Amino acid sequence: MPTERAARKNQAGDFVAARNRLCWIAAGVFIAIVAVGWFFPWFGYFVPVCMAGAILPAFFWGRRWCDWWCPRGSFLNQCLDPISRKKPIPRFVRGLLFRLFMMGIMMTVFSVRIYQLWPDPVKIGGFFIVFLTVTTVAGVLLGVAFKPRSWCAFCPVGTMAKWAGVEKYPLKITQECTECKACEKVCPLGIAPHSFKKSGIVADWDCLKCSLCVVKCPMQCLNFGEENLRRVA
Image (cartoon, rainbow, N blue to C red; front, side, top):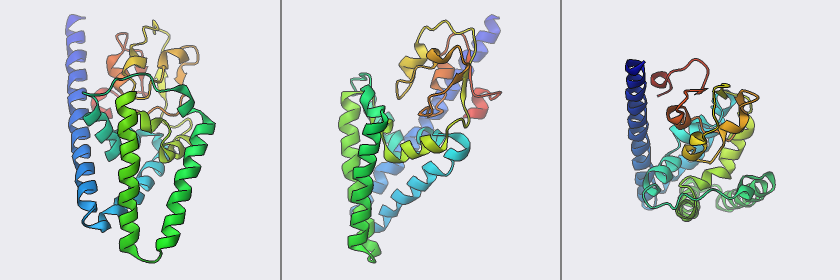
């Protein structure tokens, strides 16, 4: 048993280290694209590519893109972690009405500006960079005041990925859960997997599939099917 626990601990440590490396790479890519984009607007087309990248895989893996491959999400997570107050994300921002409100505002701005700038691809690319910068500043302010990834709680693209990913690649929980709430504390969005103990499926489809709760659980009662940490990474 001690050997098994030690092996599990080492595997968990390797997983967290690998995830951090990937997040720092994605964060660096994000910073570079935003900085270069102000001088070379063509880099703004990174925005629609990422939007498609978040929504299409969601039909198979839920919001997994949002944690593992979203450059802005990685930037917020890695760069704000040392300075964030890490306060709980206000419940209302994850509510349907607020999310629809924010989606309506941002998609309206997005559509109107593209219509106004059409068919100039350079100006449209420049708008994408401005849009990305402004929304990122908002994300930074929220991330400092609350959890680093508070923006992800109502990100319009993340919301669409959530809707597309209902029941896809679910996080599972066994009856061995003692409801210690370690999973809730480590979750980037403050989801409480322990509250789904009775059903056995964590049916909160905002789950980013980051597997941090799987690593943190002292009872090893959280999992994504038969995958171990190496395969998830």
